[in-house]
Length: 301
Image: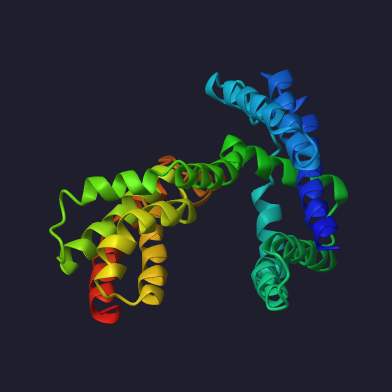
């Protein structure tokens, strides 16, 4: 049952991509390549389990070519009038936050029953959609239009979480952690706890900046630096693991590779500076790196 529900969530993602692809046919420029991009992505979501990995790789290369040649276009959408925005704002007020909060709350509750994260998050999203339909009673056509607009605003960045997670597992299997460990051993004197913690936290932040994904960086850096230079020196592995992961998120705050956190919001909010989010978060990220170093030294030993 869990397998079927998981596949259903991916199918729903594929359907959204198909709708976006057909909306792309209304573009003035690059309508065919935009259509192909979103429908190829839909194929990987819906039929990915049954397609040989080699063919999926070819499809991803095609998506990459479309992206790097700037053939993926958002297109033109009608802007909602300021008067209608103000009217809806006065009408619904804080009710607008209910569907957004429902995603997190419902997902958390479903996870308590050992339901896989894909199903939990997907289920939370479905519950949020139902609540939004009940509260706002939107026009179906407008809903589809706004959905495709949002997906197009995210654009090729929607691929990054999946690709970066896969890259992390590839790095781990390729033994990148062992290579990093051998390199760091020439820098950190044996038994120097303070320097080991500093290098571990900074490496987690930097590698997360490169990977764009704290989970992908965690396995590589913890194997290469965290275990030999921190945990093996007597640190509590639970504390090191927890703070090591959140240290990686300090890097997430200041990298364009974490596009879903830093670039997509700038695009959706139509900010003039696409790196404005990163610039605003930089001082906080640097301060948190220092805090993580101090916390590991204070709590893990």
